[in-house]
Image 1 (cartoon, rainbow, N blue to C red):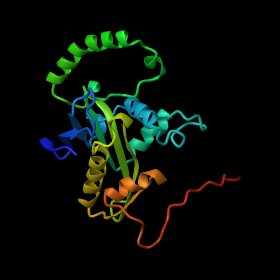
Image 2: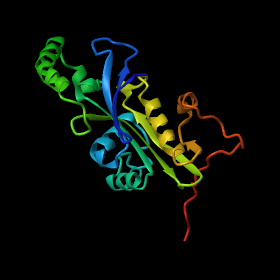
Image 3: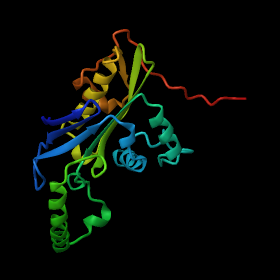
Image 4: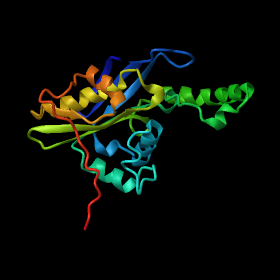
Length: 219
């Protein structure tokens, strides 16, 4: 995980995180953490849901698999806690899609050389949500008195295993416990359970589990 280099206020923070493998990418990159809903661009957030393949069916319209903007807007507006993480666009090394894989090595080098000048200019600018790329997100609902649940915690696949997800989880739990809410559940997939255990979550001591309503309502 990275170390904090600048703290603006309780709603915004600049940190550095480290990659486990360097390759040609920088070992450490700056990230900007925000808990303000105004910093969320819904189009970027929908793209992140798609890149992470997270909850697309649940937030889609008629099971299309494409996140519905109206549902997404409602979900964000009614969330009690949101945490967004941004980094500079050229630091978000995305998995190459099929068209990019067909490029010759010489063309790849040409494209890299052409983009290097722009990357140098981006490195000079201070990182903010307005010039950064959304690469991580998480949200929570609460009753403001007793319980809360964490939903849709995700990080861009190319930037996973850098501690960003844990920063999001810690920020959400910190905000909730500051309101004296300690009964916090994490709604997650089975393969995400080890991650949440590493963040301090465990099986419910009372043995309760989450069950979802699946029966169609009849008139």
